[in-house]
Length: 136
View 1: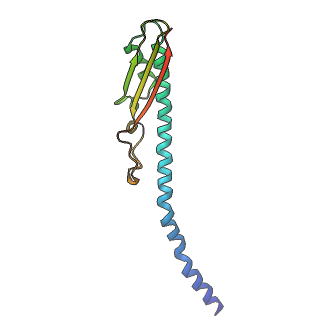
View 2: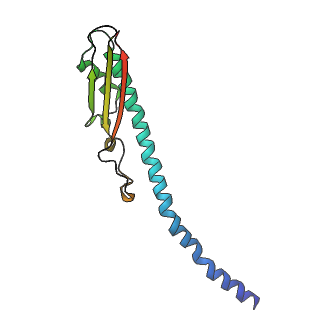
View 3: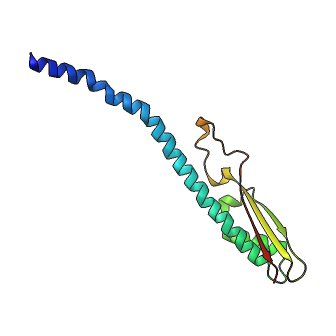
């Protein structure tokens, strides 16, 4: 008799593990996708900021043109981030003027849109960086 009861308890509890897995696996998947997507976005943001700083440094040098700044930014920035990139450059005319370089890159170029099933979309969102320096 006692052996029979133990087998019944084991048989009744056998579905708990599969039910727990079915409930927690989608949550774990969303967390992993979010971690992957946001790490790609943070890495891309660092690249955009670095490219903006390099471009502003070039713009602060005497004789710099907007083409020189754009070329310097494209040298530093990853080619996939250069697609649909917008660069705004304000060059000062004289030494001591403020030089501004701003870069805007679509988030969709930096990361796949993995979280769209839960309502978080990257469409229409931008990675943005701006740097201001004094012209030499």
